[in-house]
Image (cartoon, rainbow, N blue to C red; front, side, top):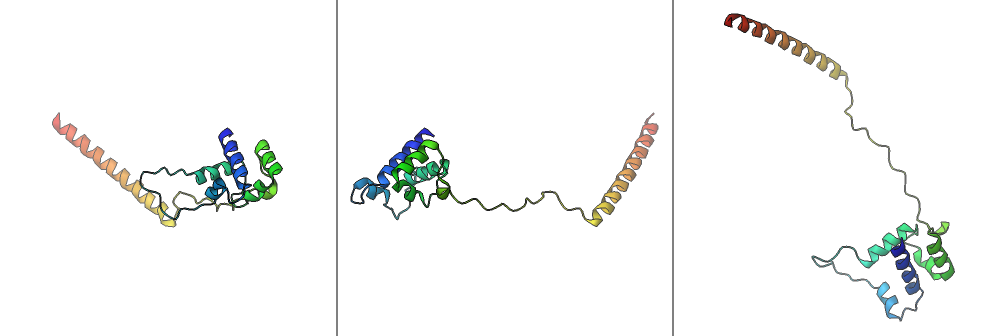
Length: 137
């Protein structure tokens, strides 16, 4: 939380700078190329989005909050953004689908047949075993 607070503190400072200053221009810069192979995936922008999420600040409207220095400092001090700068609530997730197979009408009949077949095979195998044992003695 400490690092996120420091990152956002610097972000608010840079956001309030004039555009002709180099840090402000770098904050608004965009590179239209893909990252080279082997480059770290965690960029400065992605780390800022994670820090904004930790404090509950909407990533689309953070610059409006940062423009007011007192409100920005209070947000970072309290750890919670004002209600109008929080991200909208997530839509409700759909109902969970059951992972069990549905029971069909033919399932009971099939299971009964399988049970009868098992019983028949068990009796037949026991009968053969007893015959073979008797013959060997």
